[in-house]
Amino acid sequence: MPKKILSVLSHTEYGNLEDSDIGLFASAFAPVAGSQMTILLSEDAVNYAVRGQEGTGIKVAGAPVQPGFLIETDVQSVQEAKIPVYAFREDLEERGIRENEIGPGIKTVSRREYGKLVDQFDTVWNW
Image (cartoon, rainbow, N blue to C red):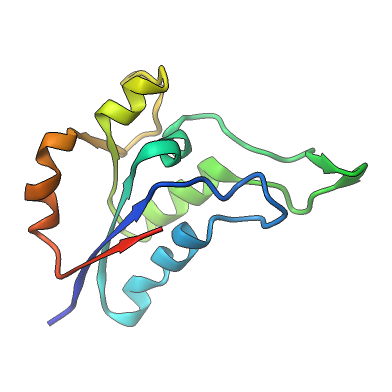
């Protein structure tokens, strides 16, 4: 039986010299290993849900970061791999992000429902 994994991303990794978030990147490979993955964006990582984000053209010490940060594209890619993406409603609200500003297919969940959500999984990864 495939293992069901909830991958909770709490911190944003974009903005360092890496071109992707390691938690998001690792989560994308779970289905290849036969596991069912779901991603939950919490705390600062709810910013990944905002539509229209891309970070090409960023320079560090005068040199362009290649290929650039493709935040929205990365989130869409995991969804295309049949990985559901959730975000905590309260964390979105705390950062002034309205539900009509988040990407398509991203579902919101209340922190009060977290226990019920976790109960659906065999393993929880925290990044």
